[in-house]
Figure: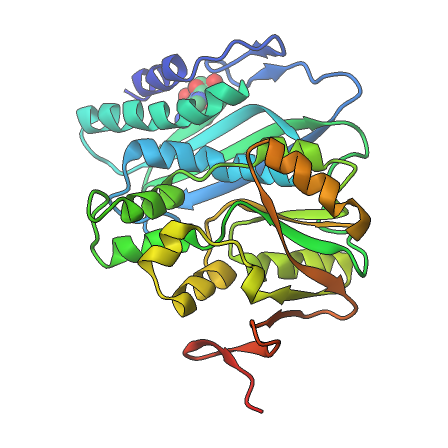
Amino acid sequence: MEFRLIDRIRERTAQGREDVRLGIGDDAALVAPPVGQEIAIAIDTLVEGVHFPQGTAAADIGWKSLAVNLSDLAAMGASPAWALLALTLPPHAAECHAQFIDEFAKGFAQLAQPHRLALIGGDTTRGALTVSVAVHGFVPPGKALTRAGARVGDLVLVTGTLGDAAAGLQLLQQGVRIDEGDGRAAYLIERLNRPTPRLAVGLALRERASACIDVSDGLLADLGHLCAASGLGAEIDAALLPRSSMLLGAFDEASARDFALTGGDDYELCFTVPSARVAEVQTDLARMGCGATRIGRMVEGDQVRVRDEHGQWLEVTRRGWDHFAP
Ligand code: ADP
Ligand code: MG
């Protein structure tokens, strides 16, 4: 049975690539790495009930399991080539598996195909529903973006909008259905289930961004990682945080700010650019159809601090974000 399932995956994700000498079906895949390129490698695991809610559609799981990995390649400025897929499926009847696999592979392929990414192998086991994807991408030697390298005075930018995915998750947890309301819920839940990895932006940022990270755990957490790797701190203006009209229409200002600062799963890129180059970078990214918003700057220290619209510093309290007591 396993073999028939693997065949279904192979058929649905077929992608002709010259550099894949032997794909799914043997004991290992064989690839011909391009001469003179470095290979960026990343792996991420999604566990049902932890990284996606129970009841998430198989096609959405397929898309997202690849998207979160492509987002890591985007953050490195790498272009994707190959992937491995380790699937752990609960012990259900064979026909349930076939249906799950068909839908899963469809969602996976929808994202893989436009990027010419080839699924070249994997593993299939029994247990709690868990999906691990490993990706490999190419980057010219020495040109990868990393979390280290930001300088004092560099400006902090972020692509797209923040907080949508966390808002979508909260709606799902409140029992809101995707077809409810005026399309806001559908948009926010789609942002949770079908994140867009910013691959083209990652390539455009090579040799321009001083540091880069993707926002998977929330802006403050991930910018914190960039700061730690760069040995610096950052100051963010809450008033500058890019939020979608859907988010602002569905939640009050304080919740929307909270989602944007601490909500995970957006898979936007957060990066730093020397101030003299910001205008040029913003123009180029806008032309690519993915705006980038300046939200703050890098400073000495090791803290990420957030200023509200009155210039006062915010701090985390048990109730969420609040003002410092005077
Ligand atoms: P082995 O026991 O030698 O590891 P498997 O039966 O696990 O072989 O896998 C057979 C072939 O199918 C291998 O080429 C493997 O990479 C591929 N494969 C197994 N599971 C998956 C999967 N979930 N997705 C893609 N390829 C898979
Ligand atoms: Mg195996």
